[in-house]
Amino acid sequence: MELDVEVHPATADRFEAVGAILAPKSADGRACWCLSYRLPNAEFREMHGPAALARLRRFADEGTPPGVVATVDGEPAGWCSVAPRTSHHRLTHSRTIPVVDDVPVWSIVCIVVRPQFRRQGMARRLLEGAIDYARAAGAPMLEAYPVDPEGARVSPALAYVGTTGLFASVGFERIVATDSKSAGLQRWLMRRELP
Image (tube, rainbow, N blue to C red; front, side, top):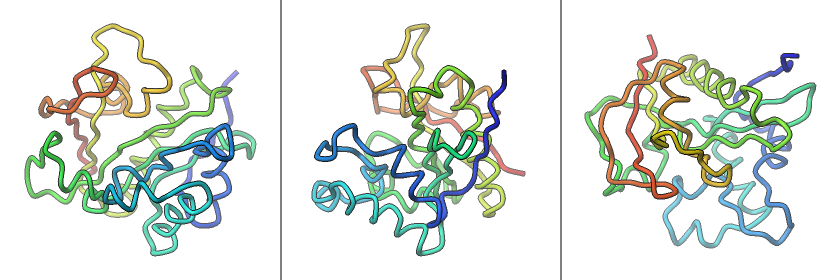
């Protein structure tokens, strides 16, 4: 049976769902909250719990939702971080993920699917929603930095960057191998034009 999935930009009124997806299992546990690429390291290290979620929400409050959120029958199911590359401090200053030209790309840096919704096509649905959102916002091109698992299985804990096969399935093409690795695997810069 196919899931009844809705994917929408993570506007401020949808941040309860974003929090349900990104929160660590324990209230005092550390979590990235999709801020590690967006903030300078010193600021990122200071962010915990509700303060981190509030900081992520601030992007939506300022007018550019920082990603898309998927729900299934109203239940939070998945998250995809997608926003202008220029809004990601670490990407702007990266030594391992190159800037290949001056196109004002948007970047996908994270995909999170809650365990009960995995292995049901949710990551692909999130990417389709991210493409729709970026196109509607006027982005000319999307960029992502997935791993090439070379036939190996990627741990769910390290799969947040996605795989080259997943991105290829929604029209992304490999542009250049980066010097970045995730889970010890090569990351590729992949792109998709948004006509």
